[in-house]
Image (tube, rainbow, N blue to C red):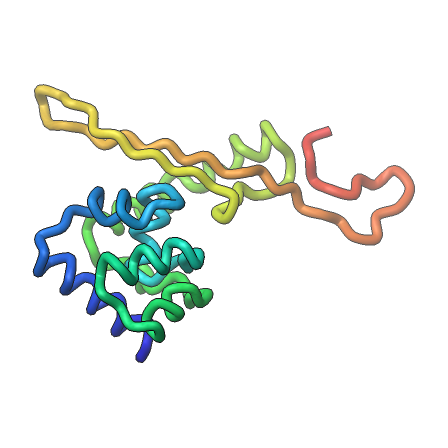
Length: 160
């Protein structure tokens, strides 16, 4: 079985049972709803306990349960993405990415914001002109390392 096949099976069961993501994420537990959803969609691996909870919830076999615990091949979207909602994130990065880069690196130095050591929060904000989506992303700053630096040369890209 391929991971994509298991993802389709899980989504079929979700539809058949009319389950909300909240129900699935709460039942499996062990991580944020974003990470549990990503696990169901094949983008993150589950811990042994999460896989056991998913096995019980979805009625999975031992092989399917083990497959949920394997490190996945991440990133399945084409570039640019074709889904309109996902495309808006791509658009945000295309338009504001260079500004975010400049502001982050002016504050922290030469480095990146981790997408591995990363938190994500989403909130619905009622608005009479149409509800709004509030997203908060928080990633650990990782300075670039300059291996072999000597003398007065910095070893990493932290702001001096």
